[in-house]
Length: 193
Image (cartoon, rainbow, N blue to C red; front, side, top):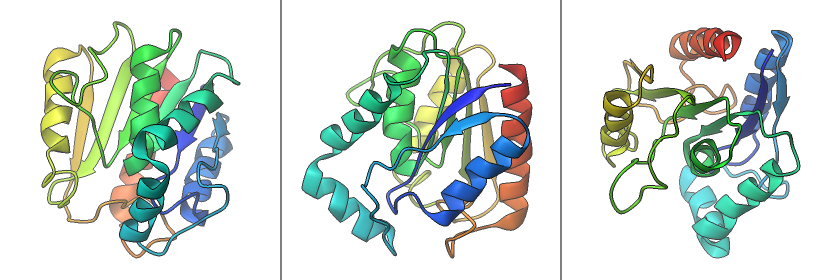
């Protein structure tokens, strides 16, 4: 069984993120769900992003990185949207990473915003909707395609729709069919790493 460090999205550690973690736990995996927002949960992405801006994106990402160093190094790092920032940084830079699960967001592995190249032997799955104005409209899909092109075994799964955080049951953006398929693919991934 895998040990997962799952970072929440910009709306906070919502009941939907907790439920997703519990679904993974029900299959025997250990899942850590740190609250980077100290209990704050926001009704919209915009409110959450305003909170993050107030603290600073880099500082918020580093909160997640520091939390990881309190845990074993052989982790699968996962993140929803904003949570991809610490998850992807850790997967690419912390020795011992077993894998990365990137939901609704992806950073490039080359160019200005890159953390660096993808490390050998670290499995990765990327999930997003094919008409999500953030994932597609802001270029994350291009970063995802770069990873799939350059990293052996990397997987990109696109789901039909235009919702951003579609696997969080507590949000209006929840898409049950796509979320069920995402969960099945994630569980298969965790059984392999």
